[in-house]
Image 1 (tube, rainbow, N blue to C red):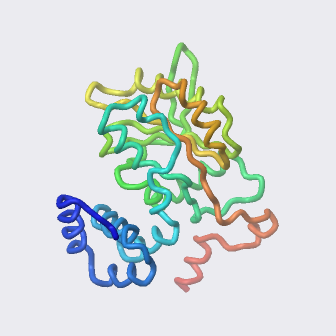
Image 2 (image 1 turned 120 degrees about the vertical axis):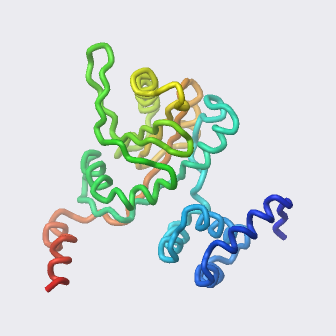
Length: 251
């Protein structure tokens, strides 16, 4: 049996009333767990998802990914900021809308994420506003570039996302810690909360990540990212692009 407090029960009732009946029918057919079903009801009400978008989130198993990243937020952020930031980050992230060649580079991943920025923002979740890629900061007359920079309108802070097409190594956390310190000194305003870093890797060992984050002073989390389509070069070159398909459909 799922037990909820009075306040939680009222929130669930409001959420149930805020989404269309066909959403409920779809959830009843696709999701067996009551707790999981209520999660998608509330998230749909908060984010204003269409039925198709909601079903995509169900298919990607958002319920089990939300808030599962290894972070140091409890040690580096005050409550309730730490709890809210924790729930903002997923593990893993699913980039099933990308089509990359074998042996792709981090630059290829970055470019495709920006090319499909609307889908990327949907996977990141509500509140992320994109500010730029390879965002330049100058520290001690040295040039540094952040892979992706966002501002989170709910957390009221800058968010740096660093992409690594490799397994996590502790050195990555140290570099991200440096970037966050520099960003807070150069861009953060008094009204902004401390900047947050998200390190996305192809693979990680959670124990290793926990040890690495334990000594970091800046708030950050580490997640994996999954790709469902990585095509060999010879196949990718023979397939039509989205633009080519659209032109054929118009004809």
